[in-house]
Image (tube, rainbow over all chains, first blue to last red; front, side, top):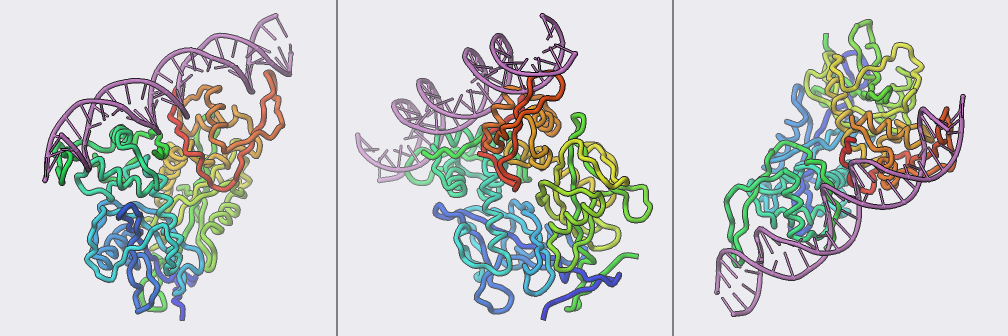
Length: 228
Length: 228
DNA sequence: GTAATAGTGTCTTTTAGACACTATAGC
DNA sequence: GCTATAGTGTCTAAAAGACACTATTAC
């Protein structure tokens, strides 16, 4: 039985408004997306999300549901767009607003039912969530060198090597370390923290941070994929 | 009195789902947006839009309402995003999905109540439509050299000078004609039609067309704003 | 012819790619 | 010392900016 709704003017209305969050991270050179078990005990998995409450901003819903279902917060989040074609949700007319939230490599997900899947794979997902995930991958690839979209995907302080590994996983390319450092610094999106980090052998690396946590565009500089 | 809705599960639901379309064009070097009179006889103007019918794709609603309210079609349309913060519509909980639709300079709007306003001005608009319009301007500026977003803003066949005038109005910059032609051709988004056009004195200009009408990204080539 | 617009060629500047070289750590 | 990682310098290649020059039209 599908949910329905009628408004006070007598017209059919959406049964609910949903939000979904694509949480992306990098592990071992691969781009991963976070999925949760669906309400009910189905096999099929879904993006974390839920219904917008009355009077609630959808962005707040997205963050609230992300925390409820996975225990995670989001250092960076931006809207991906609306997904509202008929039939996208078998429960009824339920448009969804999707968000993109990158998180750092090694992020531990408190909720045990959450699971990482390859973002670029073909794991079937509930609703139209595969389409949403594909849109998220396309978005983060497209903005990689033009914005600070990776803010959320790197910890508060990171080395240029850390950043390079994340960029390489997203772009599916290999960058020359020297050129990468020069070009990332040239975007003006990062600044040195002054600290250094030594882990094992090798010269300690200088640490950097992003100059802003809010979604921003870089200097509009070009960056092609330089496959070494 | 505000509209409300309750779904078949007993929970509050959105009263409706809306779409709004930002129609942009260029006239005399300025970027203009199309507004219509609001239903009812208010002074305040709004973006053309309306409610999504049950079982209807929001994109189809946007095109249908655009045609109903202005008589226009849209050669190119893409989703801008969802606008759904509480209070955006005084009539009740009504999320809106906004679209961006550029149309060629000189487009005649059949409906007499439609009016062009400066896209970058501060004309007050109904609902959150000023915010939507600002997002549209930012989007078209950002994608200008990276996509065929101007497909809709140029007629089926155009000269490089036509294109340059449109690009200059969007980017608020002046381009060197020679460099502009070289760089636009280098994007791979346009191709010669073989035809020429002579209007008044001067050498006839070769005509070009876009190679695709679907939203596409260019070759990822860089283009800075070259202010002559 | 002149004025006007279209289009080509090419030199310079800027950005990116490649890669040799130096620097500093653990062992 | 050797190996591993970090970081610098610089040469080359590619893209963009500037601008002189040629081409074709109306008058």
